[in-house]
Length: 333
Image (cartoon, rainbow, N blue to C red; front, side):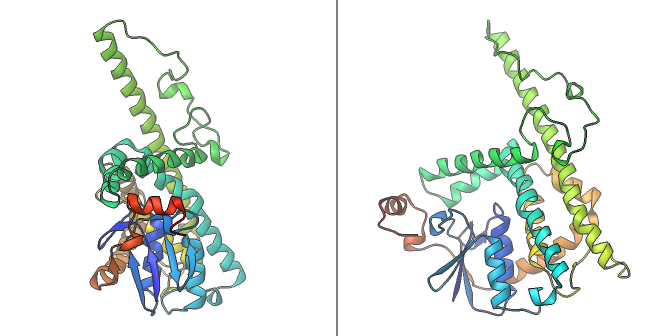
């Protein structure tokens, strides 16, 4: 039986990994026996990343590898396979998949880890459910540091560069128009308690301004990436009359579309304190958001209606004792 390890707790799946969500939605769309393990344990993976699909003793890691294997080996009437697509369509699907994994992924990282409100009031608290003491503290910090490096690839959380710099466009607003940037000023030493409070207030205002700029960049970027899907759908379904829907087949979804649904679900998750992305997509692309919400509702209804989800047991548990076993070589990945 197939076994899929994902982020989560008990019988609930976490939104911190859209790749996990898309993998399990794909799995439940196939007519094969499986079980989902909410281990939240990256030690089961040789690349230190979830999701991991295990069949017998073979492991498939990451959504791209998992989806390619499942779709090829277990054809389904609900999933677009390679035989259903022409060579050109396969390239289009691959291009869209890469937009998800290497573009939208960085917006997701920003939304959960770099956005202060979401990180402090939601994301960091989730790790307390997934890990015991003291791992509950160092794991979110590790993901936070990783997210900082990733979002820099899109010009988020960095200094300098044009507003649309990564796309090759020129910013219409000078950097000084965002209020004078004092980032290069030397650190000031407080000379009194009042002066110290003023410096702290100024520092908070600068951080809030920087975060607002980054959030605005995220909105520009997510709109650009969604436009790829919208234009391809409109071109292929000109006579359909729908604003948005399945791209390659009206009754099936492709691997790239499924991953997009997972990213939008995570970006617009209602429990996040800062819902700036949800508000923007609701105003800018309501047809896309409404369609994806219907698909997600169908997937989750199937997912939580059965008893296919279980928590980790024995060596699957991300405990300090098992961590020591992995470090000592007693447990092998």
